[in-house]
Image 1: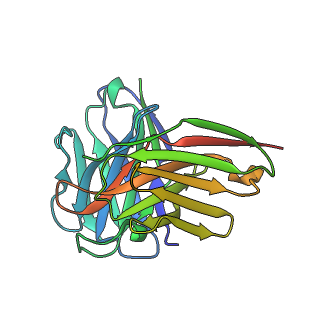
Image 2: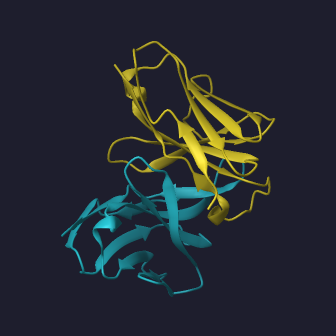
Amino acid sequence: GAVVSQHPSRVICKSGTSVKIECRSLDFQATTMFWYRQFPKQSLMLMATSNEGSKATYEQGVEKDKFLINHASLTLSTLTVTSAHPEDSSFYICSAREGRRRGLTNTEAFFGQGTRLTVV
Amino acid sequence: GEDVEQSLFLSVREGDSSVINCTYTDSSSTYLYWYKQEPGAGLQLLTYIFSNMDMKQDQRLTVLLNKKDKHLSLRIADTQTGDSAIYFCAGGSYSNSGYSTLTFGKGTMLLVSP
């Protein structure tokens, strides 16, 4: 299957600082990217959907000013956790797929390896 | 919205069959999925089943779907130590922007001992 690379895989940062997580599609054009978050012993929850060249759409309860998503190219999307706090410590994972059609099945979405963020 | 539940842990011996169970609430999901996550790796789509099917077999994997009970299971035959991973059940759903996306269970950690 297609390859999606997420970086870094682990990061520890101090409270109040910002952290950027990158998600790259290596062998296809990722027109649409999804960002998920997983708290310990909880489900992966969708945070936002982004299309290349346009603003991300956030799910209910996700602060867009805190979780900045940039999808400026067809191979790269970034998630920046601004002014991180310990409660932002979580596992963040992206998925990417080609095509803008909303009804594409999820068999065409490929996941990165995830980023474990710890805020101290 | 969709709610997906699965047990958190399963331990089996090598060569045995493993059965991972999942229940979901949204019967409108067109597809139901099983993903595997190995340590340090991304989620890998293992298999999926269309909602109008009740069984799908793919080599060592068998997916059973009971739509009446909203119950999905994944059976791994002749489980190997390399099958040790976290397995996520997921139902199709829609994001706020109308894109088809996934609602995941919490994941079942499968531990296979020699």
